[in-house]
Length: 178
Image 1: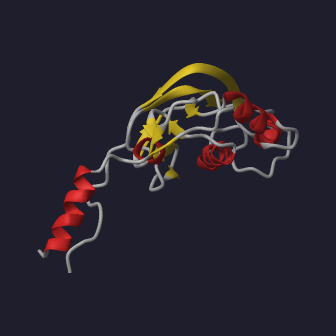
Image 2: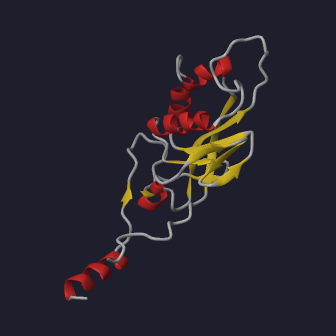
Image 3: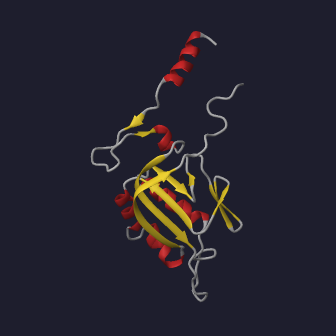
C-alpha cells in the first residue's frame, strides 16, 4: 500500500460522516446523517403511520385486479414509492427499514420485505413532513383514492414521534479485490 492509499484509508476512517441540514421551514430542523438517510442508522422524527389491511369485497363485482381487496406487494410498492416522492426521509415496512437495496416481493400468500415475511395488516412508517406526505397520498386520483374501489383498506395517521430502526449493513461494502 503506497502513502496515498494509506492517507485515503485514514481519511475515510477518521472523517465524520456528512450531515444535511433541513430547510428552515422544515419541521425536522436537526441535521440528518447520510447513513440515516440511506437506512443504515436509526432515524426519529415526525411522520405518518399507514396500515394496509385486507378488505372483503362482494363477489358480484367484476374487478380487473387479481384477488381484489387483498394486500399485494405492488400495493406496498406503490405506497412506498409515493412516500419517497413526497419527501420521506426514511421508511420501514412491517418493521423492516428500507434502503436502496430493499426488495418487496410476493411469494405465494406472503409478502417479503428484504426476504423477511411481514404480517397482514401491513404497517408502513415514514419519517418526514407528515402533513405533506399525508396530503400527497390522499390527493384526488392518488394512490389512496385508487385503493377505494378494489384495493386494500388504508388507514393513515400522523405521528409526532416515530422511531425507525437501522437496516443491517451489506456484508461487502466497497470494491472487491481482483
